[in-house]
Image (tube, rainbow, N blue to C red; front, side):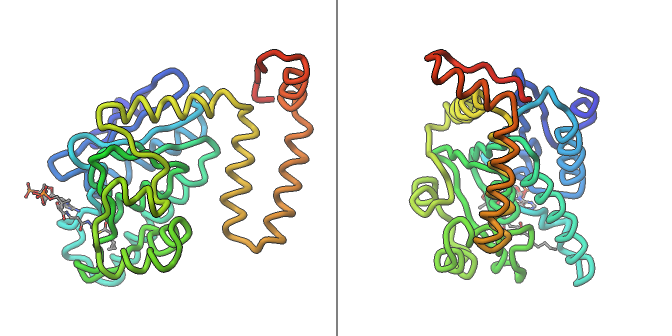
Length: 263
Ligand code: CO8
């Protein structure tokens, strides 16, 4: 609550156990300036600690989700400042990706450059029909460096990632879905409801099963198959030791709904 009150570029609201973060600097299509990065960082530090918040949705106000890093701020940067900026944003996006709670990007409009990269640090992307994705950095003489050269090929494959990064071509929602960049395309007016509905479905499951699935998938993408399978085994063993595992299996066999307690 205290964090939410001190924000200027992001609106943070609670809907039950779901935190809804709305990027809210519509005059600049929610471009990521220093202040916005700092606010996102503060929010995610809080989300890591706050046990009553179980899932997160990130969306944008106006016609932008996030139209990238703030170009007016970067205009004067030279090599070292560019590296520092990339370093800072990468650390933040890693933190978002590593949050042990499900995070959905509800992409309402332009998700370009750092905005596309922000959406890719979330677990799942739901796009409104108005959403537009792209990595236009080459137009500006730089490369995607908030994780785009790494996360985009992991999501869509190297061939399409290279095409999008080399050409800077913008991709509308339906095409983004066809290449695997987004999970689902929905009408603009139902975007937030759809994101909440998917998150609620996830939150009905055993929380530790979701958390360890996320850890297994994310860490698994960074290591070879053998190491990933070892990790999967270890995390599975942890879930087999939980009360929620017993509840889930007892409930199935007892033909009743499970009630999970995150234990
Ligand atoms: N940064 C700063 N301001 C922006 C940005 C941005 N990324 N995007 C839009 N704005 C501003 C515009 O300047 C404009 O401001 P003003 O009203 O004061 O002129 C306002 O938002 C509205 O934008 P437009 O008038 O351009 O709106 P349109 O509907 O005509 O166009 C577009 C929308 C197509 C989204 C267009 O605004 C655009 O192309 N924006 C830039 C997109 C872009 O290139 N993003 C990538 C930035 S680079 C990045 O994210 C990664 C950086 C990696 C390097 C970092 C290391 C240093």
